[in-house]
Structure formats: structure tokens, C-alpha cells
Amino acid sequence: MTTRRTLTSFALAPAALALALAGCSAAPAETSSDAAGDYLACAMSGAGGWNDKSFNEQVLAGLEQAEAELGVEVLPFESRTSDDFVPGLESLIDQGCDLVFSVGFDANEAVNAAAAANPGIDFVTVDGFAIDDTLPNLKPVAYDMAQSAFLGGYVAAAHSTTHTVATFGAVHNAAITDFMTGYTNGAEFWAQETGTPTTVLGWDPETQEGVFVGGFEDQIAAKNIAATQLDQGADVLFPVAGPLFAAVGAAIADTGTDAVFLGVDSDVAVTSPDYAPSVLVSVEKRMTDAVVAIIAEAAAGDFSSEAYLGDLDNGGTGLSAFHDFEESVSPELRDRLAEIAADIISGDIDPRA
Image 1 (spheres, rainbow, N blue to C red):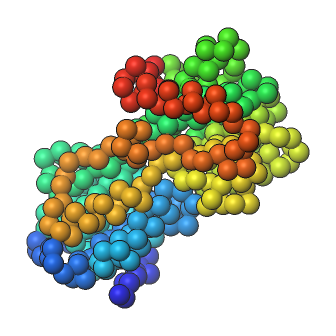
Image 2: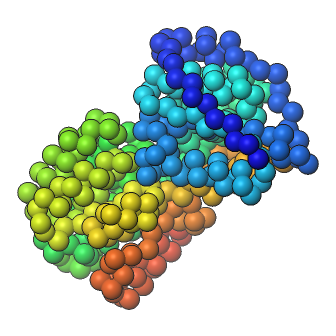
């Protein structure tokens, strides 16, 4: 199977959003359920690009897995900045895509406009939402990350010897702060259970105020934030900032201490093994499987605009293996994590409360 790639890179002013996408309207796509090779599944990355060792890379992996397993053709478009979103979608539409994934909350407005202007093409907004929930060709994919982050916060507090843990985000957005809220509440839950006072730096779920880099690209700013939190006594950090975990790893290395961090989205100990000695565990947003499943359904003519929510119950999110810290995590703690997960699923524990 030949994989079609695009090197298109151009930009349109945001004000031209609806007009540009409306001008790309295509005739209804012909989806063949018995000839997957005639089906073109496409995806546009978020501004971090495909090689972010995080959620963009997971979506690309799903696209490539669908190509290998389902026999569909695939076409990725890599965004470098938010200015690429409209032309990126325009490029994929013009090249005959039957299905288009758009990755990241910051591209949500663009993909909603594209879906409204192109009713013959199916769209998926990952970490986004349908502005008009009556659109039959737009499927939101979201994840209840507060659930697994709560488990991560519990582990962080249990592991900490200073009884100070920390978090920070890339930007102040619900998709980011959901992780931070779960993490903070999980750490505080451990403190309440054990009677051990624990401080969480970087986020206050009640005031919705915290520490943010301002984007996903400034490694220097992220390292400075991590260094400050380490100086304040934190020995477990949770950067909810995609590839900026590298800055945290560097800040920890500079201290020469046993501080650790939690990975976000992907299993960072696996995707970036150089950092494995500092990765206690990762809070996974498991996008790859969802991408393959959605492509399989759409290629068979069964695309649905019903929103998908990944959670602990359906395995859409969860904690990774502990890898280098397997021996550090006691059987008792593992059992307690399983009990807490069950209570979150049943509703007995609210990770946001």
C-alpha cells in the first residue's frame, strides 16, 4: 500500500476561517465497506507536530496501524503552528480524504468549521467538542483524564519523601487542567487517608489558578518552572505539557537528587527511554486504539457522530507500568490503586471533588 503524504505548508488569517473552508466543500465521499484500499483516512497534527512523544504521536500511530491492519490509505498533515490549521484541513479536503482527524483543542474551531462546510466528509476532533452538536459528520473524542490523574496524584504523594509534590501545565485550558485537578485531588486524598500533611504546588482546583508555561514549545521556561518547584521542596513533578517533560528531566538531572516526574498522555518511559530512570509512572491518554476503531467503523460505512469518552472503565485512560520503579511500588499500594479505580468507576470517588 502506498501511503500518500503532504508537504503542504501555508497559512491563512484566522478571520478567513469559515470562508476558506466553505470554499473547499466536496461532494459526498463514497465509502466502500468491501474495498478498504479505496478509503483515505487523514489526520492533522496539533501545533507540536507528529514527533511530540505525546498525543500527536499516538494519533499518527493509530493512522499507521489502520493502514497496516485495515488496508486503508492514510495521509497525515503536520501542523507547526496554529496558523497551519485552516490550510492543513483545506489541503486534506482537497486531496480527497474520506475521514479527517484533527488533533488538539486549539484546532477545534477550525475543524468544526470544516465539518459544517463539508458535509460529505467525516471529521473527528480529538480533545475538542462539537460547537453544533447536530452535525452528523463530526465526532468528538475526549478523555476523562481527572480519573487516571487522580491515581497518579495518589502514587506521587505515596512516593514523595518531602511530602511536597507539584504540577504545571502548558496552557490554561480544560483539557490541561483536568489532569492537574485529578492529580492534586489524588495527592490530597492520600494525605487524608494516611494523616500525612502533603503540599501540592502549581494548581488550586478551587480557584482554578496555577502555573503555566504559555505553550508547548518553550523548554527553557518549562525548565525554569520545574527548577523553582524542585527548589520549593517538590520531589515528584507532573508536567501536563506534552513534550516539555524533557525540560523537567533536565531540571531534575541538574539537581542531582532522586526527584522524579510523571509522564503525560503516552508511556514516557517507553517513548523516551533515556528519561525512564526519572519517570515514576505515566498518566496515559490512549488515543491509538480509538483512532483505529473509528477508522474501521468509518471505512465500513458506520461512522457515528456520537461522542467518545475514554475513561478508566473502558480503558481509554489509565496508569502505565511502573518500569524502573516496579520494586518501589508495594503490593499494598497497587491493591489500593485498584480499589480507588473501582470506586472512581462506580462513582463512589469523584476525582474532581
